[in-house]
Image (cartoon, rainbow, N blue to C red):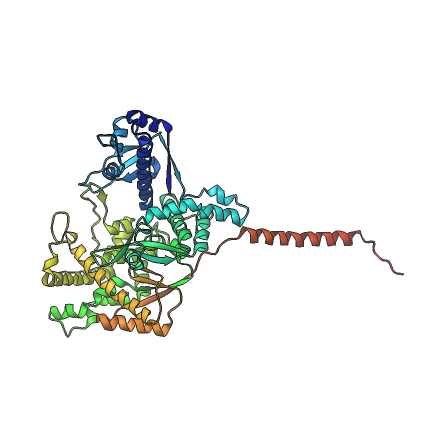
Length: 528
């Protein structure tokens, strides 16, 4: 959690301005500070930009701070307003947000306030630790702070104690606590490829998970946030928005099953009806969608061929990164990414680059990618299916065309949003089939991440095939496939065991030295 220490002069000034009733100033300031602490905590959980981190800025809503920060005196003056008007600010506004931009204000702490972040481990504390107990103390936190963290994240938990009500609010995820602690140790002492804001965010998320799990005896609560687009999201830190390494640490040893090339597979489920609608019922599906089918059926060869023609020897992109970038590029195309290299100003006045520009940042690689015959054919086929699905939506769901969440800022129907809406509902439908099939065998997933599902044990080839058959049969889409991947926990590092092992080795070495010295002192025996 975030703890603020405010200089005693602030309370003294507030007490002088509002002397009655006794203690009112102290209570009002305490309430205000607790609101500031909660808002700074939420800002850190959302993550800081490099600029915010550099200048010590936090993104918060000043309007909420003013409303929630309390009032004081007979005229009920807002504490935030009084502090600001009288130059006793605890937070200072650097960039003010507006309701039109939809952005938070950028604020920083003044010299009157000192911040202490309990969700932070000092690297030297871990690197200089000599025993397992020391490391565990650094990573476990204190009980009072952990309970305060829990109460902040789940204020209604004690009120809504009924099991059915809590189930409607939260999803429970089992946490491998020892594995997460090992992840934090690795992150702070060994990780070299994650740093800056990404490292800070990962550390805060990991310590948040540990803090909650210490209170719940091994579980993390994810607050449900269902989307109108069909997906189930979660507020704050969740198994969905942590990086893959932290997710592996959190879930421990388990099996992940995700839909192979899910958005492309979903679209291809409509390929035959597309041909029928365009007078080509008798057309060969493979001749009409050769690139897409190759992508689905032999993705490894497909990607290797494209990679060969896109990345030349002069490309600055490391070889091990190239497959990942191509995968992201094709996923972006599947969601209708623009092929232009020109950026634009969004409604908030921020510059935005097209997705492909962000993914393939080298201009030469990007030009070769978009000029490649296989890529152009894939784009053409995807566009044909996109247009068809968009037309179907306009024809059969005109009632939704006026919904703001499917429109652009100017009020026009957004094709990209419509396709995302259709896909995410389709994704949820097919994953519900997977969950239902698993439940029929008494298997309960430990976590869900959109088109992926996690189980503690391997499903088995026969049962996996049965689930895939149900996915295809119930949706009429023959292109659904599940890909299995085994996840392994982070192995806890024991300083005690390492020290004992080293002591044993030293003992053996000393014994050998003593033996050699003993025999060196013995006089040789001469025989006639």
